[in-house]
Image (cartoon, rainbow, N blue to C red):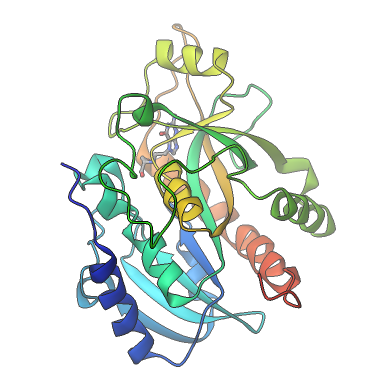
Length: 289
Ligand SMILES: Nc1nc2ncn(CCNC(CO)CO)c2c(=O)[nH]1
């Protein structure tokens, strides 16, 4: 059901948060499975459990804390979601993406989305990082799109363009910062395909998605990116490759969540320094940070 999260509800939540902290974040970071550590590196942090925030959904997935953390990354005001929401948890898609609209009403300009994903591109190794340059919205093909239903012009236009969803400048910045930090040999740029989950994809589905041009497969991020772009936020997104999707029938490999979380631990501090260095280097003069 497309239970719309109304402008008024998002505004109520944003106003509640604005009353709780003097921080005014310009960047929001969404931490994927096992990448919640990013939120622990915020300075002068003020944290809210999702269940204490009016109209906020609750995290139900192991590896997703369920906290909204306001603080500073290298001196820049940020807000970090430790735990995000997925279709497979049974949430209406508009509940999953409501935080993007709340960030917009908080005055956030840029959203950084991170996730754990399976590698479809044979060049990718477990632990690699893929900068998302574009997405394939499989659920969207079947009408499962967060913008379905009446459009609220106060957020954005009825038919938003998605050909520029993943900000080119921020992708260039990420590649530059990655090279500076010596991460170049495990960083890639590619196409992320979202599926509903919670079952991992079959071998036939992996082979099909690869043929369709996908480099990584996951169960999140795309819905948030669409809603963020609809309301005019800049979007940067990256995937931590936590396993290689199984591509041939005689392979013994089996995707599992523990492996996803384990890989997240290995890379999370490097991802934290990539993201925090990006946040520090983002343009501020023109104020469209
Ligand atoms: N093959 C494969 N590997 C993956 N690693 C992480 N994810 C994203 C899904 N993450 C879930 C389960 O770990 C938790 O949100 C996937 C996926 O969907 N497929």
